[in-house]
Image (cartoon, rainbow, N blue to C red; front, side):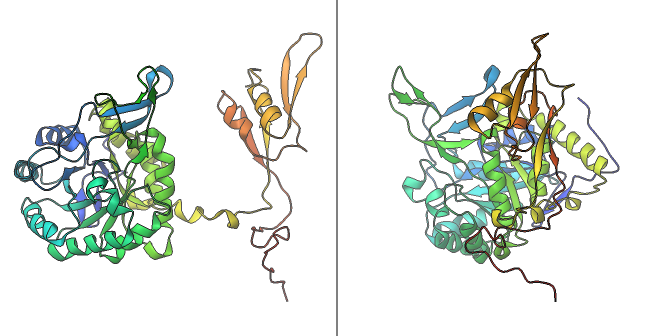
Length: 436
């Protein structure tokens, strides 16, 4: 495995005043629970870590078992579920280890995740202790969806914007460290807690935390997984499956006029450099990884750094800032999309394997726009797009097992841009000004 040292790509970042040699951080989770893990991560090349969430003493008590998963082909883990709580190690042990690791690795970012009851004195007590470790910042865990909300913490705070603002303000009052607010996805509109965090003085937000989930049921024992004794509970869902949800929520905050410019740490389903680049293109200044590291080990960061650096150089990007947020201006509300834009499917006969999946999908569930033709002499089947029936939905492109066999071709309509607010088919359309 090669390590790419490119003079054309600088992966170092300054995220709300926190510097690290690359944007790849380990998220607050089992991989960052103790010095041993964190040191191994830094040796592997991670740019930073968010230390697993600290709380009040006595520490939380976890159960066994704790994890479950959704699998794809060949038992590839698509989604990962956990019912683990915050650290079950004593506060003083964690603080000593954070101090020692930061002294040994001064160039790496160490952010400490915190979760405490909604009373100011708890935060006023712990913040100076965390600051004394030399840590670079704190992350407020307002997202944990299991175990802790029942105690008035985690998502129970993150779902109430007023609480988010209040606790954030306490942390800014009692600490000089940058404050990152970790947001829950288990909410109707993620912009509301993000706005509240900003009002409270947050230096950044991170998202998403895990999603409420039950991954599967053991139909023999009639209990959800993971099983604890004879029962189970909902847990936090993460991994590849949550990436689309995370990207959307990051984009919502990045393009919200009220949170414009608020630094974002992207989390959710990041498995490789391309995933990271997508989050950064939507405004994230760094990315946090958990599930991929748990499944494949810390060495995956080598390929992440290598791939990102090579791609950046191929595009002419010198720094992360050169492409950060570039996808945000192209992300809009549905009502502003061009109603006059038209595209139709095209099937490459040279690449088509004749499986017929495009035809079945279109014939049964879409617009009957793909014809099935059979050569009477040879019996060979071919499939062709009926252009006048094609609406450009691209279902055929998605179902085709051969990449680039079916492509979507934009059509020249001769019509100007017109969105739904202007469309005469809209009963509430706005009048479009005419030229004088």
